[in-house]
Image (cartoon, rainbow, N blue to C red):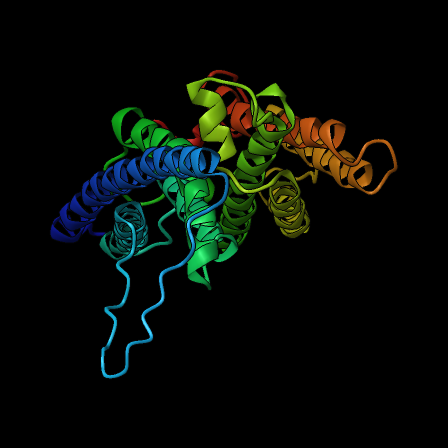
Length: 333
């Protein structure tokens, strides 16, 4: 059975992908500027407080009939707000890329590595938007700084996807023509994208708990770490996102086993992809157990979560692109 490919829609999908990457790069630049600028402003304020002995009193104007101007937002907050808007726009463009690829091929648009990584990155960006949503102005800037560290791995993945793993729009290969494809891959992508946010949060938590988190320590990296939310907040983000992603990814593995029984006549065959996916899931189970165990709740548990994140990255690239197995068809065009 042959499927006609809409070349025009496929081209628009590629343009949406390129636009998404460029917009997300712009978001990263603006958010990084906010991170650096607000850090400098914070240092200046601290120096003023130290020199004066007490913080400057807030100015009030109670003169009758005089309407005081609304104080302007600091420049760094306005830059950060623009960066956050670009992050949302880039996420929407990535979704447009995925939808147009599906319409162009008349199938679910996650039949190869290029499409799978795009979907995983989209899920990670949506997870970040939900977890780091800012309600109050004071909280907004504190949480916006985390977007810098989410966008870095996402842009790395998208660059690898578009530069080395890109596959022309085409019908899905016969081995993947099953109703289990949209179920299995979408669930795994969702779990993997949320695990990305959890891994970033745990890495930042470890930095916050390291000597770099000492406010009396000097250095550029120390000043960046000082701009992050407190360690407890980072640990809570990592834990809550892992709690969500753990069963989702587990169901993805189960759905894959059911699909394997239909395709290959067995539920489990210790294929490299199956094995490493199971190992990653066990590592995350160990993290959740350690997180609730006295003596393991903080740095030790965070290291386990980072190990799970490393296992996911290893599974994504090394297992798919280097090893030989039943999942090697995942496709480099």
